Image (cartoon, rainbow, N blue to C red; front, side, top):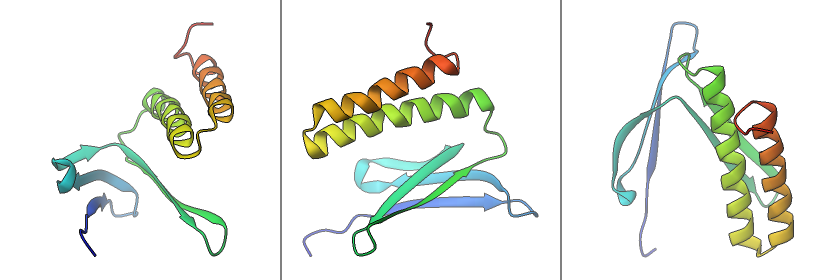
Length: 110
């Protein structure tokens, strides 16, 4: 193995096991420990042909911020899909959905 990289996510829970705060760091990317209000982690199990994931958000995450977070995540997913597959038309479908979602939640003016 030429190199190994680590991304660390720390979730502090309250007494009811609800996320109170979230921190992450990726030293190879030059990132020191940073606070975050939410994260979406998606992994693909090729053997099972199944997407796995962990979605967490802190008690401090506000609904408008969650909407913005999802809008930006959908846009990033479209870009990632296009880079990975070179399927521009299908990536545009994801962007179109993101735009409609952004309109629906009031981020984009109709």
